[in-house]
Length: 385
Image (cartoon, rainbow, N blue to C red; front, side, top):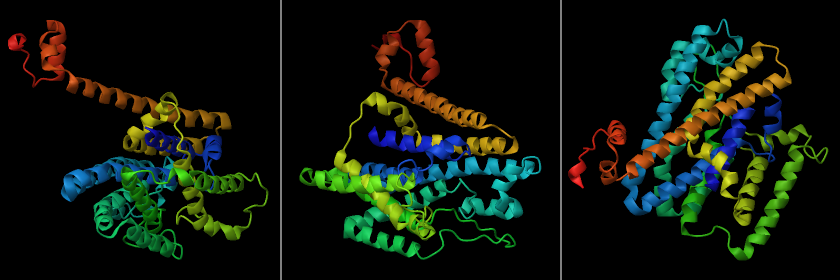
C-alpha cells in the first residue's frame, strides 16, 4: 500500500505539473533535483521486481515472461488508444486550436508518415513518451531477470550503469528533421540512461523478497548520509541556500532527460533514506493516493487527453492565475472521480466472485433476479442446497 501511495502521489504531481499554471510552479520537483517521472518509473520497476520475481520463483521463466509481456501488450494498446484519437483530432482542428497545433507540430508536418510510425513507437509527441518507454522496459524485463539469475544482480547493474554512463556523452534525444520523409521522433527520455533506473528498481524489488536491503546495525549511518544529500538537493532546488547551483555549467549534471549525475545521486539518496527510515504512515493517510497508484495505468491514460485539453484552454484564453488553478484542480478532481469509479467496480467484482452460490439460492426471488443479471452463467436453483 505504501508503494502504491507514493506512486499515486507522483501521478497527482504529474497531473498538476503538466498543465501550465501557478500549481505547476509549486509542484515542479518539490523534493529536490528529482521529478515525479523518476519516482514513477522506479516504483513501477520495484513493484515489477516484487510481483514478477515471485512468479519467476514459483512458476519459472515461461510463466513470468508470459505475464510481463501480457502487461506490455496492455500498456502498448492503451498508448495507441489514447494517442491516435488525440492526434487525429489535432490533425482535424489544428487551424482552430493553435495550442494543439503547436503541441503536435512534428506530427502535423508529415501526418501520414507519423501515423505509420506511431504503432512502431518511432513517433512520440510530447507527454506521450512515457508509456512507450514503459513498454520497451517491460519487454526487456524477462531477459534482465534471466541475466540476474545466471550472473547475479551486481553484474547486471554494472552493465546497466555502463549504459547510463554512455548516455551522459550523447544527446538526450535525437533531433527531428521536418523535411525528412520519415519523421522519426524519439521521446524526450534517453533510453540508455533511464534503463538504469528501471533495472535498479527491478533489482531492489526482487532482492527485497529475500530480506532487508539495509541491515539494522547500519541504518542510522546510511540514513544520516542520505538525509544530508537530500537536504542539500532540496535547498539547492528551492534556492534556500542562495548561489548554491546558479552556475549554468551545472545544468548538464542535473539534466532530467539524460538523468544527470547529480540528479541520480539526489534520487538515490531519497531511496536510501526511505529504506533506512522505513516510515509507516497510517492507512487513512495513504488511502487517497494509493487509490491512484493501484489504477496507475488508467490514471495516466486519462490524464494525457485532459492535460492537453486543459493546456489548450489556458493558452487560448487570457485566464487569471485563479482561473488556471481552478482548471488544474478540476482535472485532478475528474481523475479522482474516475479512479473512484474504477475502484468501486473492482470491489463489486470481488464481492460477486466471493459470493457463494448457496447464498444466492437462499435469497428472496427479487434479489435472485438481480444476481441472475450479474452472473448469468450461475443456475439459480433453490433446491440445490
